[in-house]
Image 1 (cartoon, rainbow over the protein chains, first blue to last red):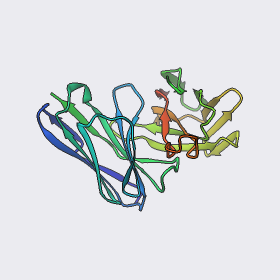
Image 2: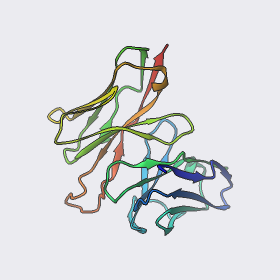
Image 3: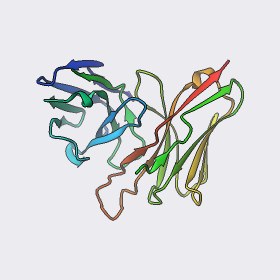
Image 4: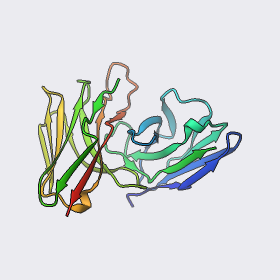
Length: 113
Length: 119
């Protein structure tokens, strides 16, 4: 199983809502990542979890709150987002932290109204 | 400051011919380079990679060339097929042992090149 799954595929939320994005992998990978991708732009790293601990936060606003409940699961909690936060949110994993090859999920298309 | 650049937003190629996608970088600390392919509504999928200690890596129809002195890499697809039509991203890994000690092999992506292969 070399798949990273993400739910939901699409999400529309208002600026006062609270929602969560979910990412799951069963490859035994010990590093998981959140990326944000705007239209016609490259993916930009947001967070890195290494062995279930947050190791990198790329100066992401606190309205984005990551969580790694176990080695297979990664969540991104969203609260009080702005319309400019609308983007494709990609989850990825790698076997160990620092390993260059990352496996990406299909992404969640988020629209903030 | 874009450390990884793909200067061609798009490339159009006839089926059976060679596709050459280019990528330039500025950070000499990058130690590993990758190419990812992305179809609409899907996440990027890994294609091929190369370590900075090599200058060529081949996998079937795909070959990646690295010119460290020019800080340039390219992806060659021969022969090109219509199913290769996608967005191609090059990515570079920072040295996980760099002075900051916190890069953890962060990937920096180029802007992508849309490849269209015509039948």
